Image (tube, rainbow, N blue to C red; front, side, top):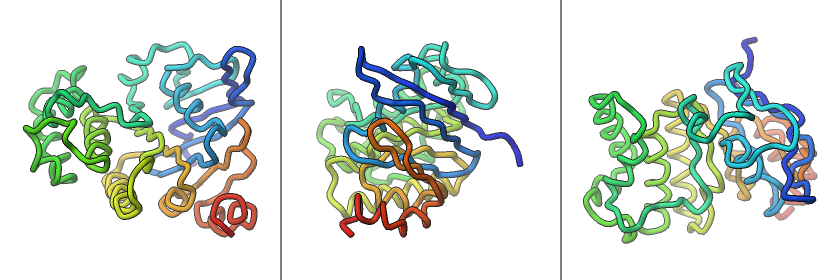
Length: 238
């Protein structure tokens, strides 16, 4: 078996004296969707911020395709191919949909390929094409989430990191967003998903990890965790 694309070992992240992530280990293999699920405040978003270089770990290792990331700046991590869709989407509301998408590609030099990638993003999210020259601030929450994902895809990621993509969205929109994530993955992109919506995340994930109070307490295939009595009792209303 080939080495994991992303390998995290004994990761610790602290805010001052508060240790938010307490020595967790996990991996992501190329071509998969993997997910880290848990309640609000469990350490999920903190983990993603560390992967993206926006928080410095207190200890531990983050290796992407064999390279240690913990000393790299966020823009260097993006250049390696780890691109995060932030919690809350971080759309620039006074810019157009097109301008927001183009910002995803601002570090790329392959101008012709950018045009092709933009066309693919608009084919994936037809609502964005319909509103391409309108202000991003006029989009619905679901459309803004599509825009945030599309902007990340324009950065040409090798591993897409998503932080709570279902947050604040109606259930029918959440289902649509998760269908799009399946489609993106089927096209060959590896995805690591952090989610409070445990059911939806485990439905699409090949493998999942459950984090509580900064520690991973369970792991297994998405199907196994969906039917695990502890997961059902704690997160699925069972």
